[in-house]
Length: 194
Length: 194
Image (cartoon, rainbow over all chains, first blue to last red):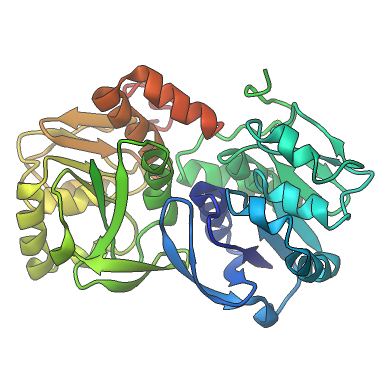
């Protein structure tokens, strides 16, 4: 199963690399790194990483979209959103972390569905999808082919949740144990919704 | 305060990027990415990132060493360990995550001091520093200028612990809240030591 990470400048480091650690520890998954044009992409924490162009996506299994400061400009970039629509339509599963759900909402595919996002930016995220059933209290939300998570580290819990749904609880627990990570395995359990 | 991350091929992704997220969220810190020669470095989860040569380390504030499969070869590389000795000697603080403590132990600087490491590789790590007081049950350990953490995600807790020690508990809690991360703030509390 290919995990196609779609990244952009000023993405949030852990939004991406939390899930990458989870999927990278799963033998059934192969993690790939893409951006619209390919080449060097810089995170909000100044990590510079190599990406391929999205034209090179080989298997439309899972699309993973992190959040971060970079989403603020991209939701206004109609060309970007149009290309994104095309990839989201084709992918079998689509996972977003944090404000990555603002980008996804902008494609219209979340309309009428439940979704969540980062607590700190929740009001802004909502403006990008007025027809989405936004759920403030949720560690992550699953609706149709979409998994959306709360802020930053919630992406780790959601990715383990996805592994659990796809490959069973034993596999998810095994990965969490190797990571020495205390998995919050209940997507309704959100201690940051206050 | 410069956080100088020393990375190498086959480092473990979250060992590095967990702490990077924490320090990148702290205004007092500036995160930099180094390797022995500089250039492109690939993680165990196939992330390719840009690094500068360690010759370009400008301020010897904090040295951060992740773990990962790559440490297995490096502990046997006398030239690497000799150069590492020199950097560790100069740095004001040295933090390791997971099997990064095997590399640090190999320099001899941990001799007589307490330290910890990844649970899964603990026996192997111990062989790299027979005079180190290895502590199996610990989320992280502080001794002298050295902070060593348990496996993978423990690096996040340790980094928040370092922020707490340097800049106060309020700052550490604030960063954990932004990350929507439930900080295990007690370094003795280790649920993976069984």
